[in-house]
Length: 494
Image (tube, rainbow, N blue to C red; front, side):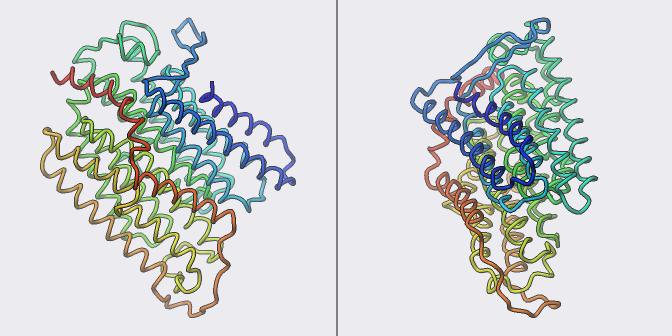
């Protein structure tokens, strides 16, 4: 029941805050922060309870819902979903802190904000595929309004593009889910029953796996369907960018792992080399495009595409180390991506009123605290030892090396992608903070970070360092959850 509280609190907060008059901004932001803290606390309770019991699924609630089609309201948690619940709670708190100064229709903003978060929590909790799809759709709709109303630049175009790509991906995934419903012979959407009793022929798996995987992977920013991501990130307000990079893209990766690979292991083995090639294109393409961007937020947007490539590559390895790396990278990129978007979208932009790198002048002397926060985030993003990015990417690379189906060029290109990440991170740090602008000569200092901004940065950096120094915080709960998937893959390979 505690896990389900994350959904209940989120939707309750959306409903209550939405009816508070918009002029009561102090009350609205206080309730928003309280709701975010409550969901995070519930996720932490789930974490410690799971750590103690160390079983596959816990807190299972199974209620009759739509018996005519075999759909149930069935929710529960295992280590994989709990890690993403904790991630969502962290990003939710940080998003509120970095939106602390928001006053324009704050009640409506936070109503959409928590409706989106409630949908995300619901996806990670769902043990019924139809219920998962419903929550998946619920998480999509608020994104449009948040970007279209509170965004910037081509916000209406970006919002529509993001939602259209999301809906197309979910429609493709729904087709695959219906195929599972009939192909299993069980006439059920029960995920656990399908894992244990579903018998899918090899031909069925070869045909349906790419449909399911691509349908979910569109939301994970998979090339060539990635173009919604940078456009949406750049136009979105900071809190929405943090949610998009931090948790919404993880919905797609979660669906790929939990549903596509978990239920169709033979299909996953057959298509693994193709996914591996697409993943390294994500990694290299995203990094190289980030290198030439002049808009600071676009740099972070394309870096998200590149880092999600490591998630896809880890999934394609289909071995214990690689899948662990993909799961760790989901959490790591969620933390680091949210931190980068927060610093660029709120802390820097609200002071300089520009995102163009050539207009930023000697920021290290004018806002040293902000610059050091971004440098720490950049080092974490490039995978420096001591941060979560290093642990996750190392697992993915080792898993890639152990995947016999992969060409050596996949490994080489993945390594090149890491070098490209180092390059664009260092180049953009220099361009933003240490270079003197030709059009600006003033050395006037900017305002320091507010208390809310400092708290948001500290929270995100804390978890990036904690997982980097002691990855067992996550691996201890992920290992038992990945075991059934690995067992199914071993049977399929045999």
